[in-house]
Length: 334
Image 1: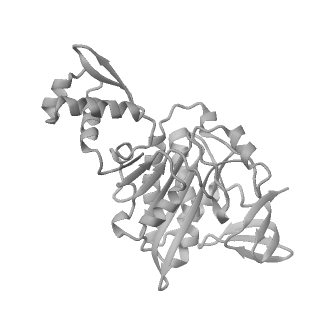
Image 2: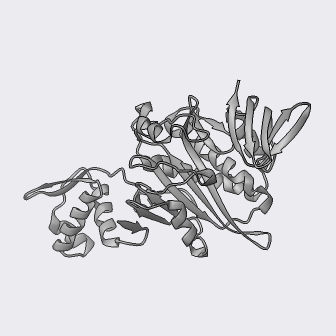
Image 3: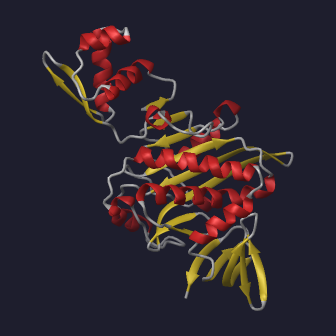
């Protein structure tokens, strides 16, 4: 099942009318007259709306009444009232897909898709950094965003760090919690992984052609089952889920907040205000000041993480020397 921002205008019209009149019953004839569609079309749209997870009561002689919205991240749910100029203003939804990142990469060459978000209810082949498996069952928030940035190629390595900061700020605002940021791009709660970022960049003539940001958030998932699937894999350090917080928040609230914060971060990168990003990231970091062990392409590095540079590189002090690490697997040690 696939939906995008421009499909099903009739369904969206019926749904919007039900949402804006959710204190009363609306007859099929009223909906037909106001929306200028047949009663049969009204009935078909309402059946589809119910299939998409919305609760619509139906009573003879009274009509239809919307009593509960869907928690599915459908395109019109994401774009409705979204306070961004570009990011997230177009959306595509899949009930199941191998990987939103793979789909986004196929769409990324078209500049018309700048800012488009691709969402999946579940992924069958989700992937994390370095090609690792990312378990993506129903209940999580899995999406990718296509961008055609203008910022300098030299700070693309800072982008996943900056994106993780945007999500952290959103979580703080929406859930009133203080998540921590583990270098390079993990968001954690009580030392367990809540979310992660993946960035694929296409370069041409020393210029960014397109960039695809993949985001995975454990919103309402079975952490024990995921831990069972991932136990023993490299760099595994536990799984957290927002559902453990027992806070009633719809997934779309978090996604919309993140898109707003991401656009703010994007503007900072555009205007080369990297110091502000680094400062805010460092305040939330669980890595800076810790003893760490890093597995890099150049071998293992052990030392104390002292800061990140403007390109996102982690600076590690060891044996009276310092090393800059752009990419690698990290373990916090005692």
